[in-house]
Length: 218
Length: 214
Image 1 (spheres, rainbow over the protein chains, first blue to last red):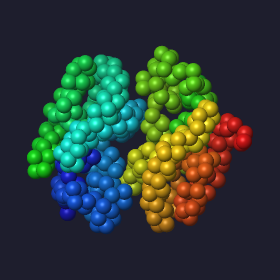
Image 2: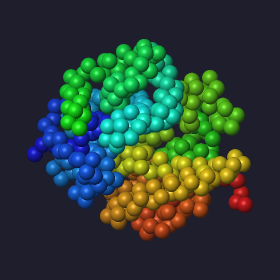
Image 3: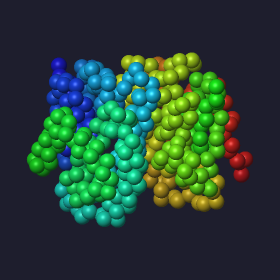
Image 4: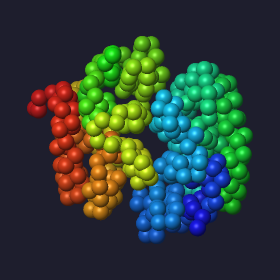
């Protein structure tokens, strides 16, 4: 039975899981969850993700939530553990550091920006709160300064090897590139080149198409 | 061999998160003070350790790491003595490590800041912020209550890093008027009573310089 991912492809957390499945080439089925109708809060979905969020994931009897935990499961199962550098303590530690940075610095600044620039106007019929956007763009820039220094020394975040730490950035990076604030990365040439490199991976291109198709359907 | 150096303030729950892991593994370390009140975390010497200018950072031989959860994974992986904090296969453990970070921490952290840290710095808790995060944390802990009714520890039958990563903030929460969020949930309370009684954790909290109660 193919693995199942529950949630819309346009969700950054769902996309993170999909790209890992594409990286290792495992069969999967993407099961829609209509969040505009509150399906993510339905008893059926909550039985899979007790916080009522997307994604949820099923592999046989195993049900998982939390995109980064699901991603690691998929990589370990599918022969992708080189993206975690398991077996090399120092390298694995750097992957873990930059996965925490992705979540705590990049995602935390990008998430309110994407919410204001995409979700509010497109799904909630509201207007973007520019104050929230500006505050978070400033946080983002401060973080990008550190990324720029890092990527001036190494090809990728954890070292001169690509890892889940890099790939985990792609869903929010995609929304940054297609949104109104893409030019913010122009001041950080190594960051810009690194993003372009990640976005050119076949797995990332495939999932980007799924994300865009999902947005067009709405 | 040079002792392990844990950089930060001994009162900071993110620093204590790492101290708890080091103590579970029976590892020697010294806390090197980095006083946020004087801006030491933004000085070049500290930025050389953590370019994001946040505590903690850990120096272990040649390895310099930051991000408390990444540091704890490293400690759990490198050191085989003491309890097995990161056993494999570990899909459920990975989920609950993430749950701590994405569901528990975003609400317990501002609560602890408002109710414990701000008063120590001479400020007053903001009741709107406290109410909002207490309400959200209550909903999160309802999920934990259901889970811990079926599981002795978060990842199953044994104590792991998933439990340990919660302890520093649970300890701080227990010193605030919102301690009832845990105390009122029988399975969460039983879990906290069990894990906080661990000798290594007793050692960890003995070293936290709480000011005397008013």
